Image (cartoon, rainbow, N blue to C red; front, side, top):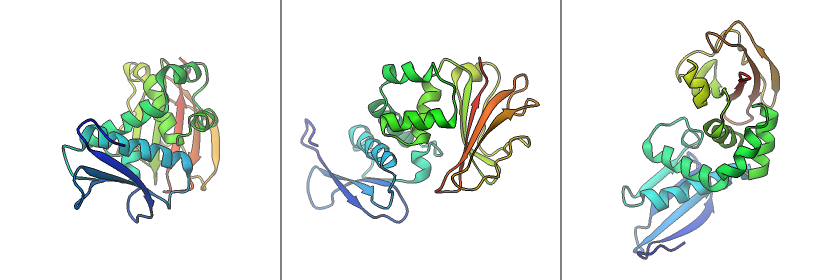
Length: 223
């Protein structure tokens, strides 16, 4: 992957212990960068997104630092470092074109099942598809990643945010939103008693991931 100024990038697949992707400047070859993708991540859509994320670092950030080690948290949107946010946005734009994505996301309910279908269509992870859906949606929806009853990361669509609802990391998951699930389990239902919003109830689906002990929570307020 050469650039106009002669910089080159090689992609290698190796096993790493603490991160999913790596982008680093070579110490012995001028103008050479290497992108490393973790072979221990067997979920191909996840690897697709990781590769696009690292390409984003190469295009936008290679003059700013020499090494980028990207953890699960960075790729799940759990980190707020500007470089990681920008690389995630690049990957989303590359893998999930906005016009095509909107045709699907604005006509379907925001549920785990529908996010799973759209993630398969675009070859990305569920979390990546959910965040893209949130960003492009004209409806009141939200996506939450939780662990041990606490919100790790969350995002509300613009319409939901303007209605007075925000999802804040570090806060407890609402009491009436029970996230005690075994890995791979899905639960759907109604989030009642204004557990997520001061004025509105919503449909809610929850999925326990098989890696990382996370629970993905999808909220659809219906307006």
